[in-house]
Length: 197
Image (cartoon, rainbow, N blue to C red; front, side, top):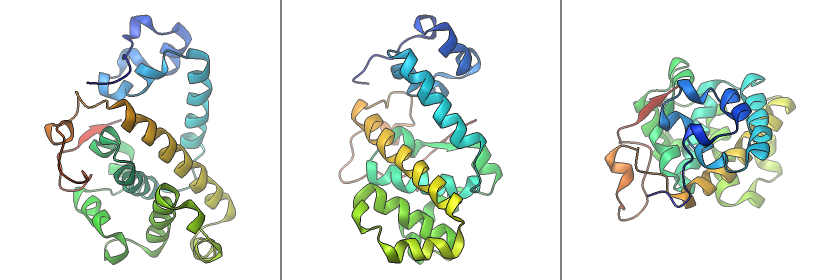
């Protein structure tokens, strides 16, 4: 059971409700916004930031989804691990590709650019000070500075809000494998996932 009450959309600030298109989204697609709705003005700003990251994205959807899922594993955010976004699926994310995230540096179906982006995201989630000159030099081989900044901001978003979501324990709408406590770490690979827009 979630540790923060999910507000029904009838309780949301009308402007927030319109911004998030909550009336046409499933409860799972409404996601954390159901909790964020307790602070509507802050949430509107957060949605503008998240929307800008999405609308003005220069990085491929496939790459962003792979980074997101690897960070979700380290965060142990069950809702983050259980979701697959349609635009990433349209850009080539398959469950076989997700399974490669178990050992991404050994995967043959990931590009060098995807591997260093995943590595950077992993460092942001586990040991951010290890993202040193060598890591940035490798990033610069594959990405522009604009893309590296975008990757950093995206990873910061995923790490921070994924950790928050993990503490809120919002699992009741997820596939069963993500609802029950498991021994050891859960993973996004080898599990039933939920597709959302």
